[in-house]
Length: 219
Image (cartoon, rainbow, N blue to C red; front, side, top):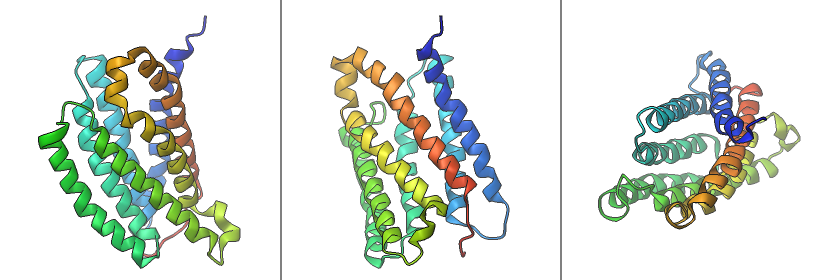
């Protein structure tokens, strides 16, 4: 009998690894492109996932603190990538404001509100919503561009589409994660195993496409 839960639990880390390997091809070339920054971020994301699995399965230790630290960095770094590809000065100013405001919020949340040992739902929601906003802003930039006939050749079209869908499904769930884990544990396990992991696979497949249809960016 095929254990689908076991397959879908382990498949995301395999897809993550393949995506991270595909990102290595962007390390060639002379310029520090936004796509190479994304590849560096994805390689780190894969490493964090491996460490998290090791903590959970082999040391039987809590890994929420690891994700809290990583996602604080992840949202800031991802915003920095969008800063490189979004042309609107208004959006770029908002990103700069987000840098400072989000960092202060994470520190306050870690010290006085949710701490490091509980999953920081407030920080995740704030960062996820802002990334959805930036992805939508890049979509709009592509739509009004004179080169929108080549939209599917743009790596950040695929990234933006992936992030909108991914965080559109993740933010509502992880925004209530602590409550759901405490009062609806079976549902939380089911959602994470089948729904959340499925969207993680979806995200990595589209990021892989982004790496495969790379184009050169100015320094």
